[in-house]
Length: 215
Image 1: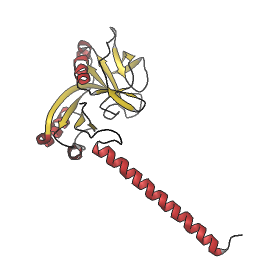
Image 2: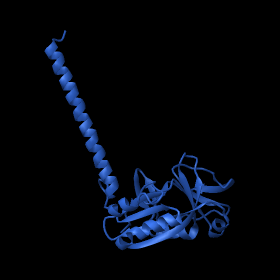
Image 3: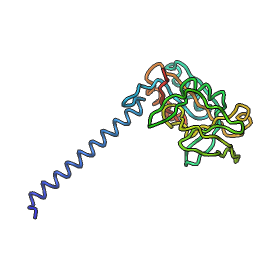
Image 4: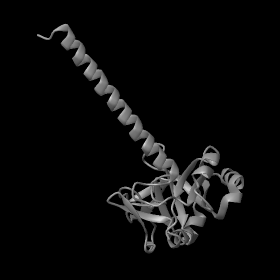
């Protein structure tokens, strides 16, 4: 049987261990937050760009607020749909825009928890589009219309699945004729570390993420 002094020592050690664990968790959380905001990873390079998602008015306002610190900015119109995952947005992109994204290294394939730019854009099927997502799906429902798609892997805009959850690419004519809600994706290249710009505009748009342009 433990004496009172022994009980007190055990209780003190347990409380001390608990406090140490809490401090460790807080430090780990702070490090992860710092990495996320700064655009750095443990093994990657620092971000030099931003990808914004929102209405045309929202993205234009955000770009104007940080215009002086930008090297370049490009805006693209996309159409949106609701995915099967609650709260997740999918976008529909015309082939011409998708080619520009691939050439700029914006479209990146995720494999083994790492991302790398697509070497080229897959050919589109004659009767539908292609789907970039975490998992395959034979079709996507857009404005109550079932759109046939061919799955082409886990590809995202940027290095992570941030602004959008899924990407469907259609032929330009098919995209033009599709009725769906439109949004704007703005791709910005910054003169310096863009984390400061991100903090200024994060509340002005619907989604925003840091990005490292391929060298």
